Amino acid sequence: MQKQILFVCLGNICRSPAAESVFIHLIKEQGIEDYYHVDSAGTGSWHVGSQADSRMKDAAKTRGIVIKSIARQITREDLQKFDLILTMDNENLSSVMSLAEELDSNLTKKIKPILSYASASKLVEVPDPYYGGEQGFENVLDLLEDSCKGLLKELIRMG
Ligand code: 4NP
Image (cartoon, rainbow, N blue to C red; front, side, top):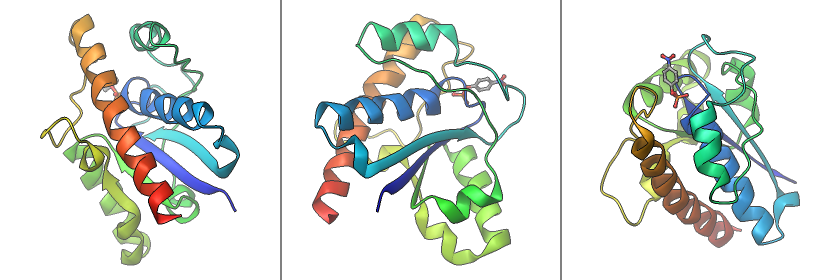
């Protein structure tokens, strides 16, 4: 059975689509994409239906990573369906935790900050790059490449 992985941020146009695409890139590189279903969602609804931010798409593309995601808002069904839900910052973490608590507190076990899998950073939040400059997008991709590698290693280890 496929492992179902969901990345979550606020708008679903910058960080979580990047995380989704970085993770897909890694599993494709290893030829194990059939074992995973990967998606992303936002806690907010402002950007529903939009493509990812073009600055994030461009920054990812220079690393060979294509972002195809269309923004959507997280649903209660997502909390039931996905095996692991990775949040970008403390605000997303608490929003998704609250949603899970409303349904079934056991679901909170599926929710983890993506940076808990990072090896090269002590940060606990992926900074929101939306209102910043180009360097913010590179920083997000550095953090996500590192933490997605850590996540995949852990998933493979757990079998
Ligand atoms: P994201 O970035 O959560 O990484 O997709 C944001 C994009 C847009 C907004 C906030 C965060 N916004 O407020 O419009």
